[in-house]
Length: 253
Image (cartoon, rainbow, N blue to C red; front, side, top):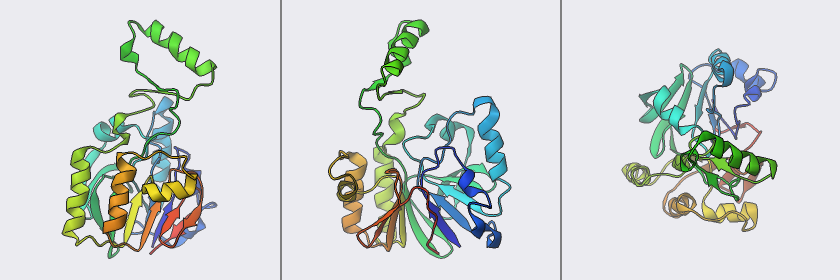
C-alpha cells in the first residue's frame, strides 16, 4: 500500500492510529509519502527528536520530498545519505526518508519522479540576513521592528534557505533520469505545482519561478498517471491528473 498526504509543518499527529487507522494493515514495506514541508526544522529542547522517535515506532515507512519550510542545513548535514529504491535519500530514521530531488524511485513496482522545493509566499516584506548587521544587538533590533509591525519576512539560514529552489545540477539530474525512463513514470510527487496548475489554484496569485516553469516543461513532455503535490494548503482534484493535498490521505497503490 502507498498513501500520500500533504504538508505537516512538524505536526505529525495525523500519523497517530486514531487519525490514520489504515495503518493497522500496513508494514514497513508500505509507504506514506508527504508532499513537502514535513517539518525538519529546529530541534528545540529535543522536542523534534522525541517526536521523530515516536514516528520510528509506526508500522509503515514515511517518505517525504522537501518543501520550502525545511531546514536544509540540517537535512544535508545531520542525516546519512543513502541509496534508496533507485535514487538517493537522507535517512532520518529506520522508517523515515527524505527523497532527494530529481530521482525516479521504484516503489512497489511503480515509478515515482520526486522533486521537492518551492518558493516561499510569506516573504513579501523581505529576507533579513544576520550577517548584514554589525552586531547581534543591531540585528535583534531590526528583527523586532519587523516582527511587531506584522511584516511578512523570514531570516536567512534560520527560517529561510536559498536552497528552497533547485540548483542547475538538480534540474539537469531530473531531466536525465526522466530521459532514462523514456519520459514515462507512474506518479510525480512534488511540493509545488506546474505554473499553469498553480494559476488555476490561485487565479494568478502565485508568481512563476524557475521551479514552476521547470515543472511546466515536465508537464508537457512526460507521460504520467497522476501528479500529486502540496504547498497550497488545500485538498482538491484539479483537472483529471493533478491532486493537491493538505490534510487528506489518498491511497494510490
